[in-house]
Image (cartoon, helix red, strand yellow):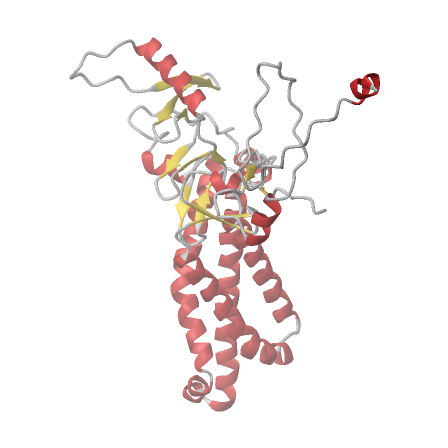
Length: 364
């Protein structure tokens, strides 16, 4: 006798999360959907460093020092680690309000603002919040149905509210926010050092080779070196400039979004309530402060759902015809007892009535 096994589908929370994100490795990896430029970033870093390790490093290690490829490998590995950590992590996405929570917030707003006459524009949905004796406005997000925390903003590309939103970086394929900003800063800092390092030792390599065979012959024999010099030259200015800009922001404890909007440098000259007034303290808070956990719980399990959306297989169909264990129910009264019905083919033949044995003996 076989036992029927009911298959149930385990659904993770990342499968039902709204927004425009992609997930891999069962929700462990989280990225934006637009990843084309991120693949270009990987190609440029991997391609340039592969050429450098394959050609210039061997020559420089013999002619100058074996520490040159070792230090280059350390910079390369650190840059790749921080890049992947920035790209594959949750930047600080804030969950959207549930239907009950959204309805409650709407009731609060209506009770506060009252009924708006038809044809008039409703007042802005904001809340005042005090930080360091300064009033900060919390804006309402019509997509996520929540009042955004301080410094949070809604990313139009990922369609999510991100805590301490800095910007959306297509080069890393993800938003940059509270949970991955430090890794983004370390990535661009290490990439700047790696670009300068590779560019400088490529020049040294060309100079050493030119002393032996001439400058033009060196360029003809090493086209890979010429390609590396061109890539590093045009990359150097943008990467180093970006690193300097974010170093300035870290020193002020300010985000790119706040700097573009002029939140603390506008006409009112409102001071930044998040700045400690000290460069060291600001850097320690941004780069060395405690990293908050993700509030998405991407790999959490939703309530189990039976996989009944697909048609049953042959094996499942045959197993469903087997007798099943009865389900305990409340006893029914005699008037509520269901009548058993059967087809004519299944109707058992009528049993003959039992002979009245006792009456027959008495007559005898």
